[in-house]
Image (cartoon, rainbow, N blue to C red):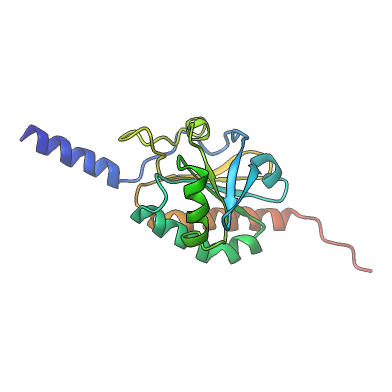
Length: 187
């Protein structure tokens, strides 16, 4: 009976959204790591990406698992809108770059990069380690503004809302910055 209660409690905690440890307003830890886009490895620099606009940084447990595949498909489908808003999307997991080369082609549909964090330095700096099994990342999404500040966080093992919620945060940031931008001179 005790085992059943503990299993039910663990299941309910895993299913419920949790809060990411890095809070809105915190400075995002900058990093450079090996990533791949459409099966082609490259060095991804968060600092360089932030110079172009906001970044959606999402952590996921493992390539080719059911939830991670759903989330990758959802982000791939939303990439035209993220790009229209000037946002970069990057997924991060503990997987090797060889595994991610395949994942970036098939599940990410060549639409956005994924990065390898085999030593978990990035996951740990963003407090995105899955407490139920620490060798994996938790499903945590961050939106980071170009000033290196976190403007949105969301953690839930269920992949269903990560794209919609991060898109809403990027749209809100874009609307605020578009309204604050000076009008271009008429000539």
